[in-house]
Image 1 (cartoon, rainbow, N blue to C red):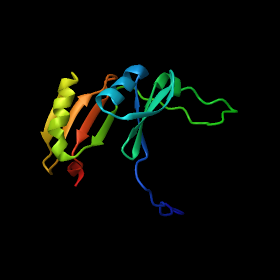
Image 2 (cartoon, rainbow, N blue to C red):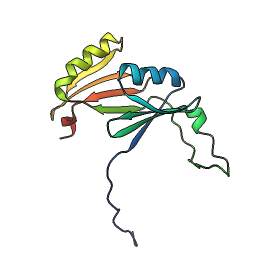
Image 3 (cartoon, helix red, strand yellow):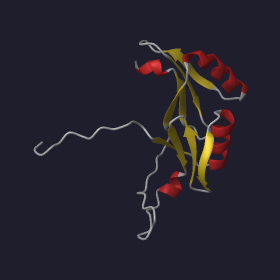
Length: 142
């Protein structure tokens, strides 16, 4: 394509989004079971959490699909998703047994627990909204 330029450099992922209808349930799960700290909330619209150097955004899709008003101070474009999303959290490999035990003690069903062919282990489970959540050794991408 004529006129293409090289993209500027990026730092990395800043935020990731999941969608849930029950934001209070999402907050209880992400703070109480997973241990993230809640950093922002607008009732009926979203709840945000600190996750390491990233932010996990949990939105109610029916609220975020509404376009901003023409005079909105923050004209965020509408967005939303149907069906289960996916979010993966990095953890030290020596903590995965403890994570499995903690999740089971919290009555969270483990859907999968395996080691990838290239190395690194992953635990998969669901959040209360049905999103696929993974806690993994970062070596899965080495």
